[in-house]
Image 1 (tube, rainbow, N blue to C red):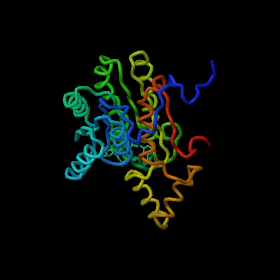
Image 2: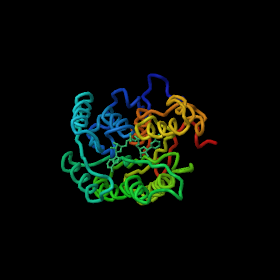
Image 3: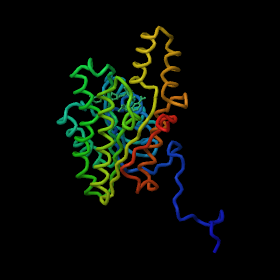
Image 4: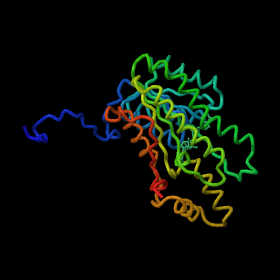
Length: 284
Ligand code: NAD
């Protein structure tokens, strides 16, 4: 017996092709991505749709624009796409969103806790209401959504929970007290969820992006340009090179492909991990 399979021998290991290229490995699954009307969440929702999953979008924005995005995604990928306008700072709305997704699609197989906001200020000037809002949306919302989604996943013996953390779940930066606390918290929540569900067919992992050029970061670039009296392009370069050895932004599509991989059979035993996709930020 040859040790390695020759080209005409069938490999016992299923080969996963690029999920963005029409591999429908998530066909029949339903994925809910919070905060998917923009940025990273939108990239993840698209990647799930490209992999054949039905998708529930969530987030704020102009209703007509959201409807355009929803219909375009459904048309482009030939899947069903729903939308929930639930506010992630309101636990009752989060529970309702999960119930509605199950009612609309029959089950909720993949939950991505991604909605997030940012506010930067020195600790002694940090507005209390911003602390409360960031903790509610970036951390507590994930707890409420996981709690609502897990019973159905347990019943079916399959589930994937992905939390969008950040490099700021692993290391800190100044002026981001609430954000860093919430992101460190969500990594803890990821680990507890993974442990409790280890033998229930459900995995829970965190993705930790470095800089991704989305509206959330655009605001920080503009503030920097104004404060330093430099152009937006210079501010962008400064922002990147201060923290990231690689002076490139990570893309929402790249994060989407990583999320799809976490839902593949190949990742069935990956649970409780925090995966940086950060241009080397946390390697330092
Ligand atoms: P974004 O501003 O482009 O998108 C945020 C999304 O969350 C939007 O759809 C918005 O409508 C939604 N949202 C905000 N508040 C909400 C609420 N109360 N209820 C429901 N939806 C709400 O930002 P992004 O950069 O795509 O951020 C997405 C996630 O990625 C966040 O958790 C963020 O912390 C994380 N992240 C971003 C970066 C980056 O560089 N952009 C890096 C690491 C982690």
